[in-house]
Picture 1: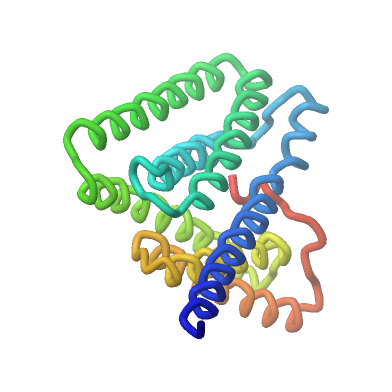
Picture 2: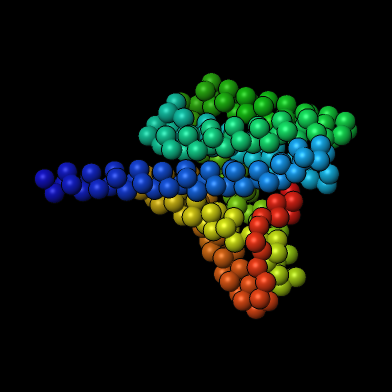
Length: 235
């Protein structure tokens, strides 16, 4: 009886961590909406870069593939959150390409084709060259590299905060959502005993704590805080 209760509690905690990770990730996925409203309103991409969304799409596709039952059985929340992320990134890229100048439009279309081709090659190789569990290991390493690179990208903003002693370019709610998402998936990965999930998200959790500590320190020291995400700084 005790073992049944423990197993039920373990399952509930795992599900809760996965659901929480999905919810906080969706907050991050919708955060560029103000930027794209501006692009649509002005009918121009101005000085914004589409590269973060190209990379975001590739990251979501790799992690989506890792979460698929054919690669990693039993981690469906990883697949669901990254499928939602891929849809958002593709939507942002479509808007960006429509409103970009011709030279930038061609560049982004080319990069989009590269991403699709790269994902196709990864999926093909994992299915034809690897059998379980080696298939999971192959895709898992790729997802770890992709996630760590994604979590490391805010270090540019962290460096800017330290140099300027201002949190203007590091919105609090965006940093908080990143931290909570990383923490949720770190817990989910630990409960699932999956290092391909908990290692990169553990790093993301630490980097999220660094951002929040810096925000607290510099917002108090300077008496000025960011009220809305200046997303062009991330682009």
